[in-house]
Image 1 (tube, rainbow, N blue to C red):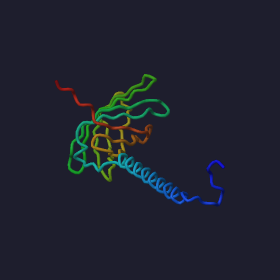
Image 2 (cartoon, rainbow, N blue to C red; image 1 turned 45 degrees about the vertical axis):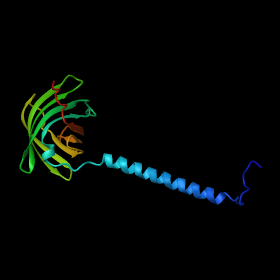
Image 3 (cartoon, rainbow, N blue to C red; image 1 turned 180 degrees about the vertical axis):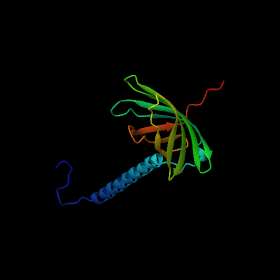
Image 4 (cartoon, rainbow, N blue to C red; image 1 turned 135 degrees about the vertical axis):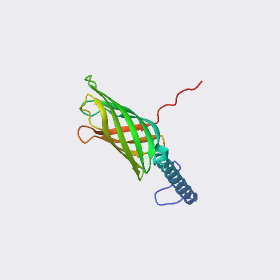
Length: 169
């Protein structure tokens, strides 16, 4: 009969087999829950202080969805009371060959893990560059991600990170 019990009849080992199957399913569910918990812990932003966000940063936007332009920049941030004061140099490049360079002065406030950066132009070439504004989630003291929204042309993803350290010989 192929070793299978007819439907509705139990063999002596069936109770133990079902108990083992249930135990294996419970262990599998527990392993999945632990894996999900560990993955979520890695993705959860760390609590970052304003002091930890001072210093040098570089940033880059994702390509603009219409123009494919990209904005890259260097930032120097210093603690100023309950905020950060930032000086920023930016370079916007476009596949069309258009480009802009600008210097900006910015102030940043940190609340609930989000750094809000408001900038004003110091100078720009050409002079039609619009000052950058950022809303950044501080994932750690070395990585922030969020949006650049200038209120006119840009509203897109941006990534901030610490610049690579210089090699010392």
